Image 1: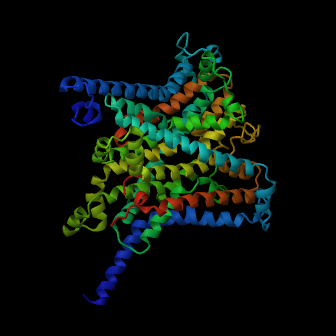
Image 2: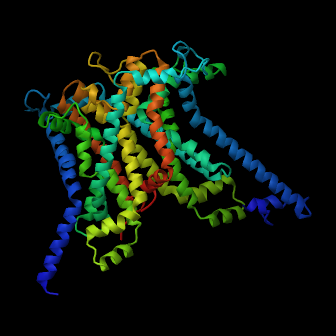
Image 3: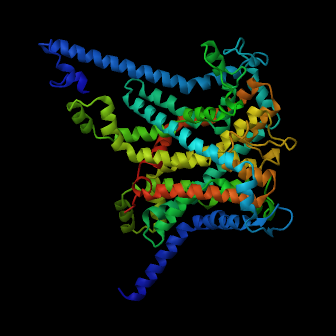
Length: 303
Length: 313
């Protein structure tokens, strides 16, 4: 903090009518204080922009049916029963169960199948490694809609699995491009000396991976698992294609929209359902904040 | 070492590599290569999923480019999103990233609050914004009205639907904030001190010290932003459905793009052609246009290898 020290020669301390250090230091301190106030006011303004939508969303979710149709911003009476009504809506619990199945099983499968691939791409030397990596990135960047017609025909006409979430879960057992890429970036940061030491001790590649690499890669694996879980939780297109014909297979993201359709004018219930879809993701984030932020940084900056 | 053992060693290492790579090799073949080739094949076929496919030459292509009324509007919308939404996100994300590095009190709380909206599931966040911005009773227009400001029709007005989507996208800026924050903290402090000694203004310090140091990350944010703008799907579709009041069910058919095609994007056309009109051939044409655009920008990302891939050596 150069301004606080009032370093001689810096523009803030060269006022001509400042013969000794004290007024200059005071001026510098005042400038620092003003700077602090300006920065933190901006911070509060930005925080309002990010938080107010959540606040209005929540306030509307506890309004009475009648009040939710008015311009009021705050509830007159707090109708916590709205949340019970949402849970009583036919299907809502099924959507929860399906979402947990898709997100949970999908995450486990994609992490398990992506680890060995990421390890090979990060640490093995082989012909076609660079090409494989480029193909992984291409797959990662591929919009799901590009291949949806043949994929749908494959699952629906050949395997007769439409009307379920299996067309979304099964592919996760064959390596997920984003997980492979992110894990590979993480594994690059593990020094080769550890692997060499394990090999000197007589470990094969598989044992090295299990005993040495995995324990060190825990933060990376946690980040990948979180991203994968959130991806499945948030997925709308997949369930829309494969599950829309069968309400018993709907997920929260897909069901939420139809909830709005069924409760056309009830903004309060729709907002309560919206809060219930957002809440788990935000709770998970609070418990795993570090892993998550590390993952975001990893996708962009490391390498 | 004899050539024999060397060769067998090499073969063993190739087998080992194949074993480790096998999940992805299967995934790549079944869920990428095969459907991609198949998409090219269907783009030249007349196929509705019931009658067997019939050769149609360039018929699907000319239909999409000259007769399908949704193609050019959706491309124009995508261009709008690429230019305006991506710019807004990058500028705002950089601003928030700079702000968070300057905040000294309660940094953790501010960072969490700024980041949180990024996590909101897209469908839930879209529903929330359609409510917040609903022209009649929504809180935003209520407050704007109190302040005597104009109250736009947001998701119900073709001229305001894309700005409303941009607002939603800017709200979820958390990912960019984290990336920019990490990049800003990596800028060498000495460069700022030297610039300050030279009497450089705040703008000059930003222009000649900050920007050159973080330009690779800005580039990364722009290119990935462009790629996701081209894939933009759940938010415009859900916003259109909810704002129009036509939702789900097999009874009502939702014509995507409400209001007045202003929220159409290319991925929605694949759905419209393939799953509403059962014209798989034309859907595959749009899919290939989407593929070409996505891969062109991915190639741009990969060319700047240092930032994205890393060497691994």
